[in-house]
Amino acid sequence: MEPLAEHDRPKRMALIASKGTLDWAYPPFILASTGAALDMDVAVFFTFYGLPLLMKDLKAKVAPHANPAMPMKMPFGPAGFQNFSWPIPNVVSGVVPGFETFATAMMKKTFKKKGVATIEELREACIEGGARLIGCQMTMDVFGFAQEDFIDGTEIGGAATFLEFAADADITLFI
Amino acid sequence: MSQEVRTSESVTGEAEATTPAREEAASPTPDLELDARGLNCPLPILKAKKAISGLEKGQILKVVATDPGAVPDFAAFSRRTKHEIVEQSEGGGEYVFLLRKV
Image (cartoon, rainbow over all chains, first blue to last red; front, top):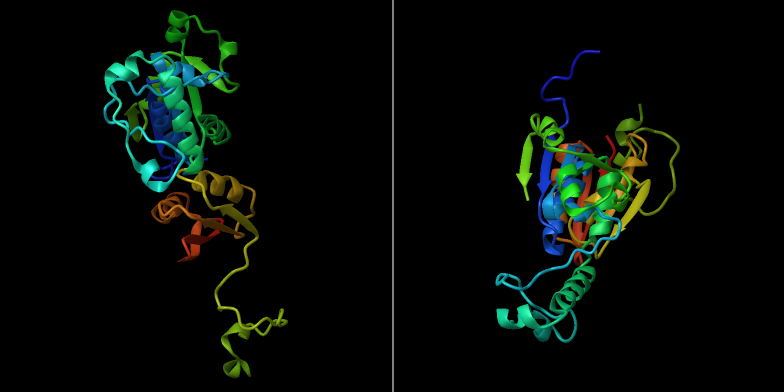
C-alpha cells in the first residue's frame, strides 16, 4: 500500500490540559471530542491540575474567588433576575464556607438548562471517538494517584509520549 | 419515447411510489432521524457523528437542532468529514439538516 499523501492523512490535534476547575475542564474535552467527530487524530495530555479531570470520581469545581470575569447568575426565577450578574466581592467569595460548592452547583444547573454536556459525557465521547487521553506519570507520582483512580481508557505517559504525537500535529494547544 | 411529457418526479419511469401530493422533487427520505433540539455545542455534532457512523454509505441522516451555532458548525462538519449536506432549512427556531453519508 502506498503511503498516504500529506493531504490524505487525518488532521492531528494535540492538547495539553493543565487546569482542573469545572470551567477549564470544558475546553479540552469539547475540542477533543469535536476533533474526533471531525475525523481528526486527537491526543490530550493531562498534567498537573488537569490530571484529576481523568478521575473516575470527577470532583471539578468552579472557583469564583479572584475570578472577576465570571458572571454570577442564578439559574432560576424570572428572566430579569436570571440575567442579573451578582457582584460578589472577593472578601465574600474567599471567606464564606461552601461558596465554591454553591457556585459549582449553580453553574452545573445553568449548563444543564442550556443543553450543555456534562464533563462526564464529553469524556465518554472522547473515548468513543478514539481520542487518546494521556495522564501524566510524574503528576501521578507527585499527587499520589494510582492508575485505578482514572477512567478506563486512560493511558499513562510522560512528556516524550506527548511530544512524539505532537511533533506531527496540525493543531497544538496548551489549555 | 414518452419521457418528454412526463413530469419531473417520474422521469425514470420506474414504478410510481406512493401518491402523496407531490413531494419537492429532491428531498430524500431520511434513513435515521436525530432530535438534537435543546442541545448546545458541541452535542449536536457529537450525536450526529455517532448517528451517521451507524449508517451505510449513501444513507441520509436528518438532524433537527435549535442551537443557531449548528448552522456554521454543520457546514464545517460537512467540509471536514465530507458527509454531504443535501438539504438544509430553518423555521420556528429549528434548523434541519439532511446529511448524506459519504
